Amino acid sequence: MRRPTLAIAVLPGLILPELAGCSPGDTFRDISFAQAQEAAASENKAILIDFFTTWCGPCKKLDNETWKDASVQAWISSHCVALKLDAEKHTELADRFDVDAYPTIMLLKPDGTQIDRLVGFKEPKEFLSAATDALAGKDSLARAREKLAHAREKLVGHEKDLLARSDFADELAEAGQHEEALKEYLWCFDEGASSLVYKGVRLSFLLMDIKKLGRRYPPAIKALEDRRDAAEERFRKDPKSSDSLTEAVALNRSLEKPERSLAFYDELRGTGPIPGVARLMLFEEISELLYRGGRFEDMVGLLDKPPKYVEGKIKTCALPTIVGAGGSEDEMEAMESAYSFMKQRVVESGTRLFEALLASKRGIEADAITTSLIEFDKTGKTIAALIEAAERQADVERATALGQRGLKELPEKEHRAVQRALDAVTKSGEANPK
Image (tube, rainbow, N blue to C red; front, side, top):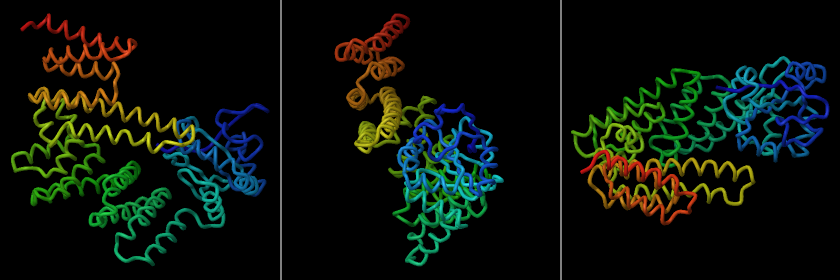
């Protein structure tokens, strides 16, 4: 849901948390939106609203860099009545202006009519250029058209135009021109299939943009479904076409239809081998459904080397710490939060794969995954999860060995989780003696 504009009431001399990060006496006023409209009309200025959230890293960067820039402050003071609003508190204004990304900077006429919107972090020079153009009558959509025209002047093949055209589609979507935006997005999707450079963007970020448009414009979802159906049919006709299956799975992921990919997998199992890249895509999409259904052999059968898969996930998860090195305090905090979430997901998926291998009588590979996961996250929680997985497969010996290892190698503060899991194994063994 998009988030709107402002309404701030403050006692004199009181600094609101919403205004934290802005130097005192500068651009942002502690007045309501209605008061801002009156002030803008009387001062012959535009209204600027910075919609932010407390958890948004780019919003904090905007505070720390752009809003503190002297030239930006001078420009805003001369041209705007500026407000800064937490979109999760000022939901009525956020909804009114269809704000669904943060930060979103709205430029409005005194009557509340939109002049332009700027989405995402803008460095000082970028903000000043865009805002100045907007007040001069050249909004984001006009700038995007100009950029697209410039790209077409240099056009050699359609690959060269894809990024500019998808940016243009973004601006159309933000401007509410949904039908035109969808046409541009779909052009990028269809033509981008033959572009090696655009291939990754096409099945990730572009699909996210089309899905986002679909929340406001249902034909976008129908277009994704049609392309999913077409990709499945292409694979039926040519089972060696891994790109078709990869595309179908990616579309189902975007549509949040993993059960559709599972049904397609079941249809394909009897028709011959599935290409390796496509099997990996299927694993990413349907492994959890297979796990829940107790289809462990199907689950591990989608991977050539399950331990290598887990090792790869662990290496990928380590990248955020490298990328985040040397960043600001806010950026490092956001990176650490993202890394913690990714780490948890890797341990959870690795533990499911460990259990599936045990159920499939592939103990050596299961043990290799155990080693990787414990080296990656040597905590009581991780070892307890592995113990519980082994216990569910009635592998008391492995569960006990894992527990003993945890109690021996972990610090005492981590023992509680391990001991609790071990106690459950003991009770299970007493209740079900061999």
